[in-house]
Amino acid sequence: MLCTSSYTPDLDTHDFRSDVTNEVTGTGYSAGGQALASVTVTYVVYRARGGASSADELLCYVDFGTDVSSTGGPFTIAWHSNGIVTAAV
Image (cartoon, one colour):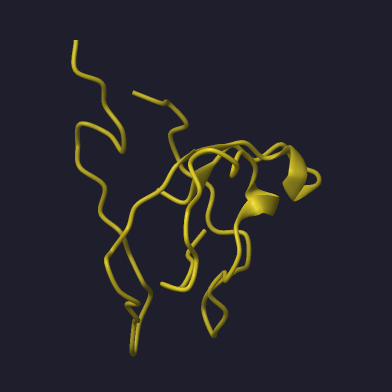
């Protein structure tokens, strides 16, 4: 899901999608975000449980640093080929 820069993540209390505020609205954007094609945890990114947003656990978030927009086409994020989140071993 995409949020405006008005959303301030709280790593101590924001555990579920229902804790996230200021989701983007607009033409070509579906509220709740887009499902990932490969759901392997190896942005805000959450696990969709198929019901209430209070059951969708937040996995991580990506901060663009400012509001960004798309004009004349889809807003696409190209994730790194190593994955969205990786851990140093």
